[in-house]
View 1 (cartoon, helix red, strand yellow):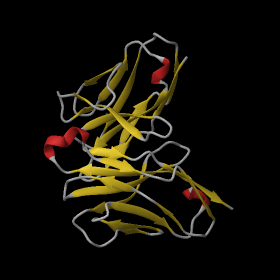
View 2 (tube, chains in turn purple, orange):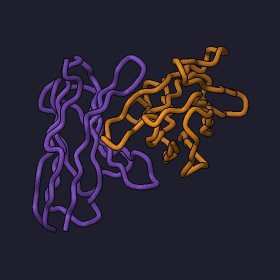
View 3 (cartoon, each protein chain N blue to C red):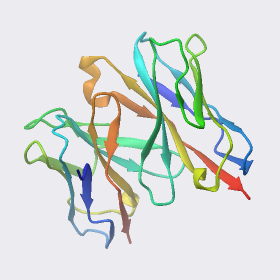
View 4 (tube, helix red, strand yellow):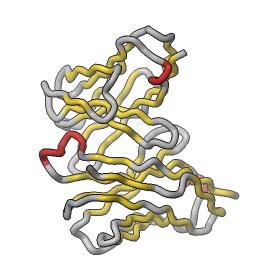
Amino acid sequence: NAGVTQTPKFQVLKTGQSMTLQCAQDMNHNSMYWYRQDPGMGLRLIYYSASEGTTDKGEVPNGYNVSRLNKREFSLRLESAAPSQTSVYFCASDGTYEQYFGPGTRLTVT
Amino acid sequence: AQTVTQSQPEMSVQEAETVTLSCTYDTSESDYYLFWYKQPPSRQMILVIRQEAYKQQNATENRFSVNFQKAAKSFSLKISDSQLGDAAMYFCAYRSLLRDNYGQNFVFGPGTRLSVLP
């Protein structure tokens, strides 16, 4: 049982480049989330998907897009990366009580 | 909207000693969940302990226990017999049970970095 998986684990981009972060869960959860983690700010919600086929903005959606490809997969896309998007990104899915997290992606935009 | 505050950005404890991490939250809801997550240097978010607001009894998981004060909206984590492997960032989190708040039902505090001194 892999839980929540994310790829890649590390990425360096130049300003203006694009990339997609992939996330998949094998726990049959309906809801999935993308967070970013910055020092001193905890985890902030970027986008979420309450169920397959639906997505909604969270607290900090600007500069990002998402796709809920199916019940298992939820991807996050940066169309034109900016240095302000340097962060650690986590994908999560909703269990009965807690959220389950992927291992995170450390993204650096230079 | 709910908020979660952790007033201690950093804490340290001597190995084998006890440490308490503080968390307060703000909500108008009567039923919710509270969590402590641990994030070691590996970055993986690991659930430490969960508390249901309707339960008066404080949750305990081995060396980890909480002091849940619902009226004061306080949820502290006590780590007993601290071990080197306890060194990590600890996040307090609140989960709303309101369905219409479903997408943003998790709120995290800013975290407390715990160092364990040998």
